[in-house]
Amino acid sequence: MKSNVERKHRLLFSVVAILYWYAIYIYVPILPTYVTHLGGTLKMVGLVVGSYGLIQMLLRIPLGIWSDRIGKRKVFITIGVLLALGSSLLMGLFPSVLAVLVGRSLAGAAAATWVSFTVLFSSYFPSQEAPRAMGLAVFYSIVGQMIATSMGGYIAEIYGWQAPFLLGALVGLVGVLLSLRIKESE
Image (cartoon, rainbow, N blue to C red; front, side, top):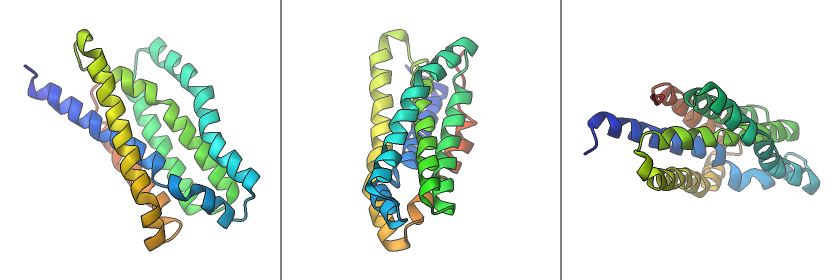
């Protein structure tokens, strides 16, 4: 039977994971239109959208190796949520095509830290429950992305272009503060 401490760690992790993905995805529904609204070409839209995947691809394996070498996961989780916050804040406060390109690249760097999330979360489970742990981690990521993308356009329509970015930063701030309470596995 799971102890209350184990449940608390798993619950805290699930909330941080959902907030992390929310902060990265809240503005995605408006991103291409926003870039053209700021005067960007369709070529720039492609660069902005593609920068997320490129940076994530370049950083994910090195960050995972680094995390394994130092044997720490929590610091990478906090950095990841902090990057998600910074990404949203940059795009929300500085409405320019360059800020959006840099901001979305930062979001790719944030997403590259996901490997540390999954490794730490799986450590909260017995080894024979690793598939369950991975399934739950993926579920939390999808929940955060689904809630964010379903709200992003609506929020922008009602409150303006910057609103999804600023909300992403606020959610990211809550995620950073909660990530500080995550327990590193022994």
